[in-house]
Amino acid sequence: QVQLVESGGGLVQAGGSLGLSCAASGSIFSINAMGWYRQAPGKQRELVASMTNGGSTNYADSVKGRFTISRDNAKNTVYLQMSSLKPEDTAVYYCNADRAWGLPRAWGRGTQVTVSS
Image (cartoon, rainbow, N blue to C red):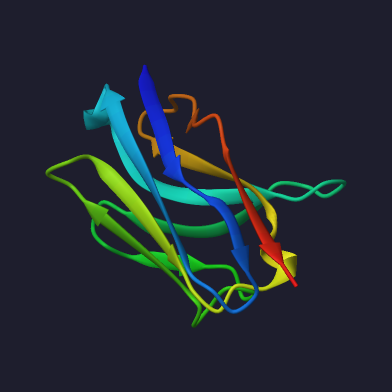
């Protein structure tokens, strides 16, 4: 099992910045990649950004140039630095870990990000 605990999030004005972090524990050797998804009310959960163990990154088009994902492998932690935030970035943000050998994905409980206009 992999456990993910998120921190950060909160309320910020449009144009502001916010950082999220997610610490992994448990069977971390099984993790291939870590990332962030988000789900706004009435919408499907969508990928925001991800990073493989090798450092390759993938971003949603809507956040490119504004969000930056990073990892501290020594701390088994993934970060999401968000800047130039927009009201449409408002959502619950979930940490995710993709795992090897067909093992099920791990999810955090989610943290709310609210961007006021």
